Image (cartoon, rainbow, N blue to C red):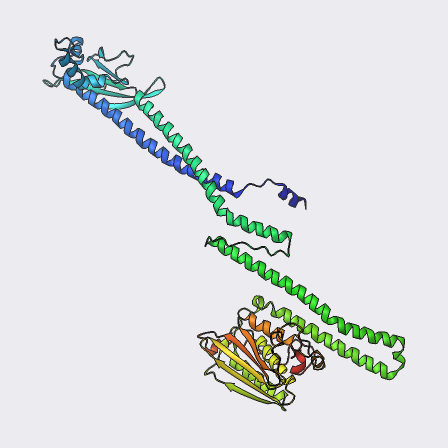
Length: 525
């Protein structure tokens, strides 16, 4: 109990926030991964450009200084690498300066150009710096660290074009300040994009999940209403989403409808039983009271009371048995949904049994089927329905003791018809004969042992197997009951598993050995 209370006391986190959070985490991981890839690729391109700048600068310096045949001097280097601004034509000088590739390279803030003699003495520097010569036998560009930052150093030995002798060294240093500035800007832009992507994904995920959860909220509201009020008729409205949630809503509504039917059936069962048992209980109580007062001393009264009480007890037993049959008939889809039966075989069996049990009646059997007909129904239930209808026909055929039975098929249905030539039913009562406990002539039905449940059981059984039962009757001329059941296509005779073959026709939920007209009390006319 305490554990349940603790669970109920926990703060609930909405699925919308969970979905939004985890979606944002996923988007964050993906965007960060792409951002890192883009940043690395872009910075590699920038770094390669910086290397190209160093290489171009080394090539320019080398092309200007290698024309000398002897070791370089400071004046030689200054004369080759410093721009000449003393010309009389200033416009021509400006054009020469800005078109000079060496001047353009020197103008970059991060580029430092140094020229050294063969002995390592600095002969030229484009800007003041404290760098030292890193000698090399060939041109190369290396990465080094200066003041805690990475820099690129390009080194090239200067060889005379005239005699190939070493005349000095050129060294270009790129402090990568522009590279780092661009990388920082790119990182800032990517960080902003990541934050915007995460924020947008969170908002979109929240809105999307809120819309997706709207049907679930409606389902939850319906469940809460039914939980609060079990008698509520609340149902999930049409979601119109045409997806799994819509299927779930339909399934829930179907389950609620089924549960409602079972509750109504239970209530109806209790009401019907209490109503129908009231009379026999009152009769038995009356006889016992009479016996206690004075009847026990009178043998005739004693015998009459005991017989009456025994008769009412048997009627109560029959009533309870039929009520249980009806209750089971209302739950067929749960227990007998996959049963298959050969209609022709069952029909012939019932026909032969009734001919043997009632030799004073004339039974005719018209079979218009070409082959065995199979339907989805439990064998005992089909037998029970046929027995109920034939019992009815026999009970109310006192003058003309004749019953016609026919079996035929249409495109997709099998038709069973049972006709009697008895009293018939008026049009006023014909729509009520399938109601529980309904009897057209209650006094005569009571004499014949009827409780008014037989036709209700037959009607419920047939409907449970997706068939229909109907009646045509004329007062004084008899009645025709017709049953229609869907045929199972492409069923071979070998598919008949003989479901229920071990049960006999006359064993219909009764502990006593009874005739068919007593084993199942019917909805009497």
